[in-house]
Figure 1 (cartoon, rainbow, N blue to C red):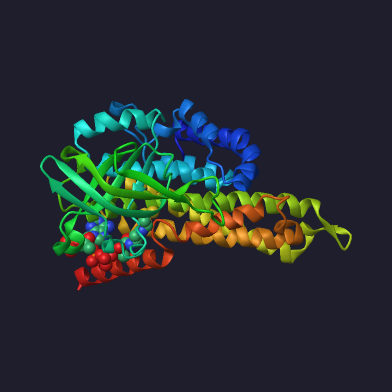
Figure 2: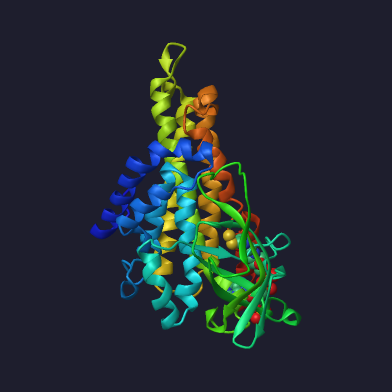
Length: 385
Ligand code: COS
């Protein structure tokens, strides 16, 4: 299939593929086993200008959009979703600054982020506020020229490794979600520490930590957008990033499919390579059909996002749901095609299957995505009436 990528987009794909094959594939099993953060790979991505892909040129980035980011994320995910999670979460954490930061805030933070000198993390989730993002309890109280933060964020990707944190906290409890605000908090600020590092089923190359705020004082100027806009900042950020999560599902599906094809050609049973059996061919055919369907949807949604369209909640939720459900399905079926070998750590598909699971969960479970899509369907139907 030809997706009519520009020459520049093809170059980005080729570069991301080269880094994935030369740096990520040889390292992924060890990073997974040791639960180790992929600093060497991040350095390579930074040297190749890939960390600033989506950041405007005036702030030191390459000035590309959602499609280019999806292409890069897809290629890295084809090799390792743990690594692509660290990469994509950096974009997730940066969106609040990109979408709501003042020019001054952008000048202060974006050049270092674009250069890969400082990583970013997004802090919304808490122990009692996962799907119910409006239920956060971390507070930010204005005292003179400072906000004082108290509370704990949970399961934060890039936690501990990132230098810059975009945090959603409650500034006015009485207003519910409308009483939340967004802030930049820098690592090293007194009162800001990290809790335990999680031991996860998959994406073990990424770090997932608690962020603990104990009377953490930050300058008043660190607010992103206006006081009370925090829930909107969070939702717009997630709207912008979810297509990329779909691309992670697409990438891991592509990687697992290629492994299954390679194995099915080599493995012989009943005197024939197993790829000669229709039962196996049909499984591979279904994978191929759905991978192209996902790529078509994800690239179309990314192009729609890049067009500047405002109503991206529904399409980005669709891209996330379709791409990540596919990632789980294809990795599971790749293990099935490879049978006992697929289940062993000697082959990469068992890790791909473990990694794929989180994609249906993070940045809004796929059940929440269906709620978002359902709500939009209701609104559209009401408008037509
Ligand atoms: N863009 C802009 N505004 C939005 C929005 C969006 N995508 N989604 C909701 N809002 C606004 C609503 O319009 C509403 O504003 P008003 O109070 O002015 O009417 C406000 O935000 C609250 O919206 P709603 O009542 O729909 O919120 P709910 O508490 O019902 O929750 C969901 C909405 C479930 C969609 C939200 O909580 C969610 O996305 N949860 C998943 C969170 C998530 O992705 N977590 C992963 C953490 S980051 S890795």
